[in-house]
Length: 214
Image (tube, rainbow, N blue to C red; front, side, top):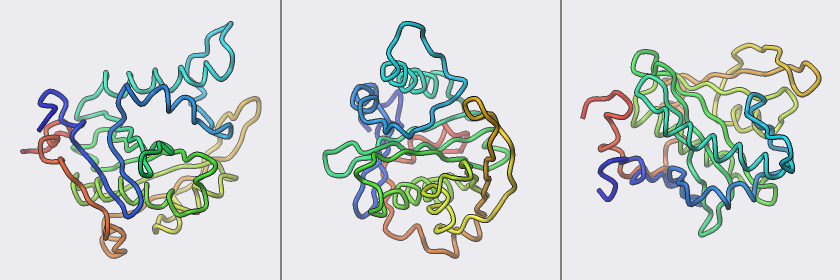
């Protein structure tokens, strides 16, 4: 173990084409630069007057990183992964848990650079964190949400067996729009066989961070 004080930095997820490792501060400049223009950021994130919009979008990435690790607890955590195809950073995939030791429910979010879409990478990224959630963390359910017109995200979810879990209305810029919610049970995940080909290394030292016994 090379990071005894933050063992998450030794955690690695692998798929046939991708490597996912927890985001580090050294990734942030590259990450801010590759954010695709259609990435919808947290509407509650701080924007700074006088900053160009690309800089403001980059600041959201920096502050999101610091918040995720700086407020981590077993009851409330967000684990952002940098997604690499070879040496190229191509996106992020986040797994989140609220009251996880009791609810055993994990949420996810991601983005993929435009030029890497349509190659099955979005599905591999999600499979990787779902394997972590169900096979390592012992989750009972995974949830996810996307705007009704985000066909790529909804397509990945449905391909992996998520089922409809209702809809809700939210502010989206200056208008109100429809958010689609989906859920995947542990039994459905185990029956799907989608964890095949996903490798998880360095998890055991991280168990206490998730409220799990060593």
